[in-house]
Length: 167
Image (cartoon, rainbow, N blue to C red):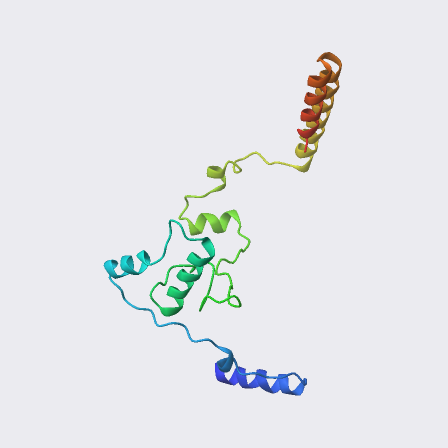
């Protein structure tokens, strides 16, 4: 089925006048992973100067070990395939979640109640609006009061601090 879909894709690309390059010619072979013992991994890791070397040379050395198949975990959360500057595709893909999906994925450990947002009390837009107005008015009153009551520089400082509160 995949071969048939690939042939149809290539046919449609040729009909639209675009250049078709086979995905098998562009693919870079993944390194053959070696099954090393802990001692062998330590010996290989000791060849890299982690104490006085710079970060670029350390990263390059670790990337080389991944490309040779000696290390497989280095950069695995960030890169897929050989670690070149053109293949830095992220494995961490953000996706939207709901409280229901969190609850099912964590076997009921993460719920609305455990996050503090569940329960019988419904929060409405008016609640946020009232709270915002109260914070702005309180900040304004405290800013004016600090400017009027406190000494010059101290009052001005507190006025600016109270102006930051609503932000």
